[in-house]
Length: 444
Ligand SMILES: Nc1nc2c(c(=O)[nH]1)N[C@H]1C(S)=C(S)[C@@H](COP(=O)(O)O)O[C@H]1N2
Ligand SMILES: [Mo]
Image (cartoon, rainbow, N blue to C red):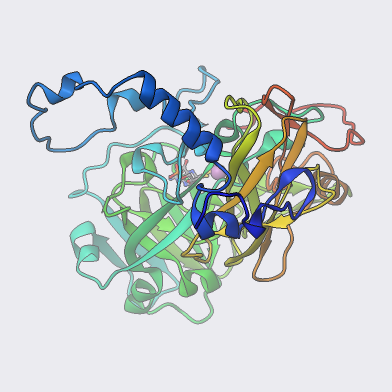
């Protein structure tokens, strides 16, 4: 391929410089980023490559458990800002500092109602009882003997992104705003296997799951989901669960609201009716404009988010070719398409979806963008395989009202000013409200 900038893909296909997603596939950055190469070549002439210090001494020895590079020590979870709530709160995954689709275990978001129990796996038991033929205790060693399966899926708190309900656009970084979601490969025993072992009564409609934390979390799970794709997870990205994510045993209900994924799982009781626990009545319900509350909103709807560039970043290199990149996911299945706009939603272009595109998992999207240095407004919009389209904020607020707190999945809008500074904006200021929620409110 010659460097004379003749790629057909360099012609914008949507407003404000969005280019065909095939540009990068076709020839990497070679065409559009001649500017980048020129800059590098100039630098090479000025500074002949010196022999760096680390080439003149032997390297560090082997380690038993590896740690990230010291220079990466800013890539950490955002802690709960409410210091009073030491045990009940959340920490957020820094989504905008990560790439690809898998969340490293040490950066998986956390949501605990009363801290992380220090469980000795040899003493831990799972009791399965209630409407079953043969109630039974399972040790972790028992469970490890069953056939396992793995699934890559996201876990998202129902309260993720809830600052989006605010009347004014919050200016937290993308991860601090939307990072109560992470994506891992979970491995464990299919819950259906254990339910057939104990002989689940056909009349049982629900399973009441209990956690072994000091909060003694409990919640009701429909048998249908339990028999479908629920996993008694023992492993997370290849290693045993981290304490904060449920060690030694947690429930994984792919695509369903985080609170149902009970950590430190100690019992499952089969019942005819749900238990009406705090976390399915007073919390994790949605107050609708009618004044009624909606319960049991299990599935997480499709959502997407541009992680680069995103709030708080600056396009320091000035005008030129950029790769806009982000994450999309849907609790209903696969992501079908992600459209990106650079002109505030007037025109859209389809982004490239990075393979493999898995159901109920993070999907990475990318699209080339020629920024001309003028103010621009970036958005992404996910469509899933059921045809569900991620709503604009105005649509979501019109349908749900502004007292929802949970299940905020509207299109996220980033504004880029002429200096390249990225901020969070709403495209319509029409929605007004009487009160705002702060990013850390409600985690009690
Ligand atoms: N036992 C127990 N399970 C729990 C919780 C808890 O506090 N205790 N929090 C729930 C909530 S609200 C969420 S969003 C997810 C968070 O999982 P994570 O901390 O692994 O990200 O766990 C759920 N399971
Ligand atoms: Mo949650």
